[in-house]
Image 1 (cartoon, rainbow, N blue to C red):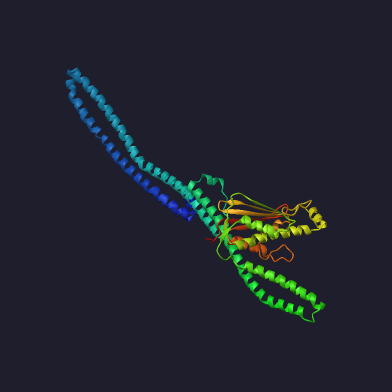
Image 2 (spheres, rainbow, N blue to C red):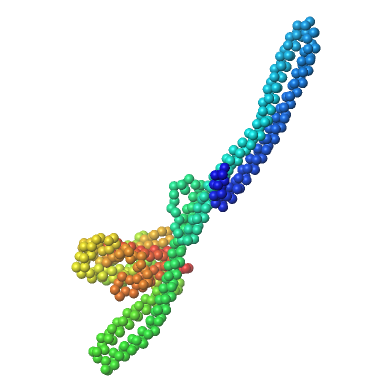
Length: 441
């Protein structure tokens, strides 16, 4: 009893409330039933106890037999009737006395039996009520814990075999929470990414503005120095350095300005095939083989043409630069790479593959298309793939790290996504775009 009370006190608050209501719903009918049974039994015993008057019948019958005996001596038929009456009367009186004895004992034992039955039924009610309360409260408390984990951004537990034994509605609720958790995590990631892009864009816009202001007078001053009569060979080399560096700073400022300026103007229908054909023809050297594969049924997409052209141009130029870097490697460097242990995603061992850029376009789903740009360049290290699109990260000597950041900003502004993947030979960039850009009419 004390152990049962101890287990009851260890119940959770929700479990205790459920247990209390179940106990109330079970005990009220049970106690009512026990009281009704006791009252009916007591009344029945009192009614059955009227068999006691058989004693009076026996006395009157005996007197009747004794009075009729003198006459029965003269009449054989009357004698036989009296004898039969005496036997029947004796049997009935004996049976009545037996019943009265049993009912008296039953009346004495009935309260004890009722009390024991009540204790057993109450104990069974407590056990069943506690078990039901725990079973009902467990999934509720577990789902509350899931909600708290979702609020903290933690992943939810994977599906377990015991869940298959739960009711269909509870399983559906678990699956809905898991789906909501994934969607919330993706939305949180998109929000963080959008805020990061916005912050970088704002900073880039300010940096571009501050860089452009001194560049123009600096270039004018260098031009005047170069035209000065006293400027000779002594100033030629410094002026060339100034010219080169100001040109590089202007290009950097232009890229910063692009990163800080979102797509403007209305969206229009864009033929991705035509756009990629133009870029492959204008931005890829002739010695590099280009292949464009467009699946049948790829429709026009609603997008900002200039921003989309800028994004794909950066990706194609990135592929061209990777191929050029691979071609610039000396045989000694190539042999050194081939002699190192194989790392997935880096340049393949053995003979180099001819320079090639392959672009594939197909539908990723009912409302999205996928563009894949693969090259045979110097490849990517898998541990650097996740950082490629950060504005301050570059793998090129003298690179600004803004080209792929501009790509990500433009694709994200259209409601799409871009990612990189290392290949045994070269690298691969995968772009997914919706048929209707985010915010387009």
